[in-house]
Length: 533
Image 1 (spheres, rainbow, N blue to C red):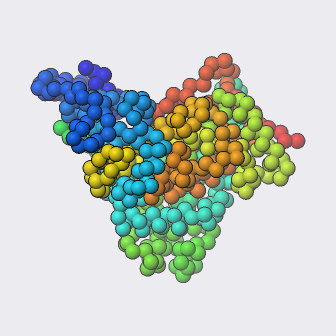
Image 2: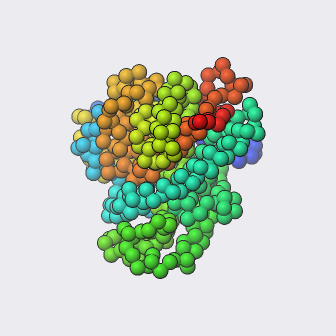
């Protein structure tokens, strides 16, 4: 019986701050619930949903829990296994939430080509409502005029090509600091190695902080704010039990998870309110006179959002301070975790595949040694490096299940009738490893992308790490610029190897679930400075 409720027990296990008394009370109440309620329930044994409704195939379900018992602590893997049995379009009942799972490029292509508008909304998610000011950010806000206008702000101004280029100075400075830290740590650590995971997280966080706020948290001494942002990212990847099984919602209350989320949200609100107030007071004369589209170097994202709020009559929604905070929080969620985990996975794959490591390092060093200095313009010319990044996105998309969509009307998809209000989940991880789309799909083979026009901008449905259609992430340029320059720098400046204690053993590539999929164990590597002379 316990295996049927593994998602609930995994949820309880992850709440490490609970006392033994809390665990005992929770398990006691859960046991009583199972003893007195479940004997009166009959397990659904049919292979598919009610055929008269025209729904896609689905596995056997349980009353109340639906198909939750089929999911493990790594849902993207469970869903891929289920799709191999029930097809690339599959219907699940996640507790009380009806959901359609798309697990192939063909299924995603048909849904986007014919139903992109109908599938462009977002479900109401309790976590986003708590942390994102009622889902008034860009990623979680429902389809409508507010979303269209805020996404326009991000695409055209906050994360435009021009702004991404202006932030290049920040990227170069922070990556240079990272290289210096690695040199310092590696010279004193001996064979212990450097914790690359921790250093990459700090790199991504510092770049986002400087671009969004104008300063690094480490420079400001804001240890509390740093902790709040880490908690924010952790909670954003959490699913509340009561959202899927309302009658078990008391678990969320009993464990205090909602209370802790609200405490984090309140702390972040206070922090960002003080930042906005400082920006208002420190506004320069030119910033008040120019339109946001003409922002000069030195402006951060808070500056630009405040200027839009006050000076742009073309934006047909009113941006409150809470809206500005929600949009900035989007930048932290998307710009920190996704960037550092992608570089981490890329380095792990290259360490596992030394021939690929040598090939990409030879390319990077040849181009840099000829030019004399590594620049972002040079990185664009590194065909094999960029192929390795695409291959990393294929095998390890940051958001393995993307951000769920919700249908706003009934649709006919691949012959199935999907009712309005159904949640749509795209398994980008399964699509990237689909044997029908990719030759030797589970192998790290960057050369598959050499001479190929396949890209990750949402136009090729087999490679969609940043989403697809109207809901494609607007931060692609910012994220990939950071990933490619940082990775090129690491490969140019250092030769990498496993510490002696780990040599001869396979590198642990286990995953840890969250809003993005991390390596379960930090990546510890030996770094030896490369001398180009």
